[in-house]
Image (tube, rainbow, N blue to C red; front, top):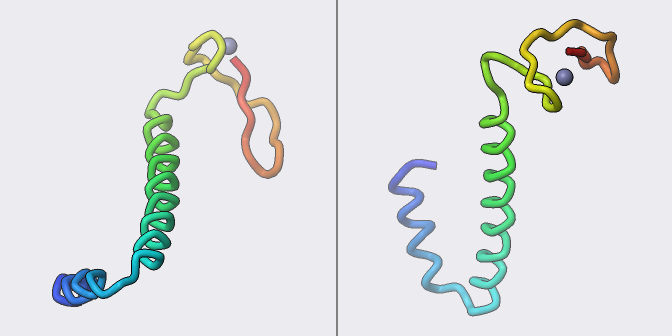
Length: 73
Ligand SMILES: [Zn+2]
């Protein structure tokens, strides 16, 4: 959305009823939680994968499950 369109859309918020504003607030809260989940996943990806149990970085391929490569330390 272009900035000018966003400002017009945002200006329209003033005309919403209290119930409509509550709906917008609830919807946005759900989106913020989804964004936090994506950030947590992105932060957990590192250049040097390691075992979550012993933190070893010596990993070996260990078959596949649901098309995803599995590893073993
Ligand atoms: Zn391990």
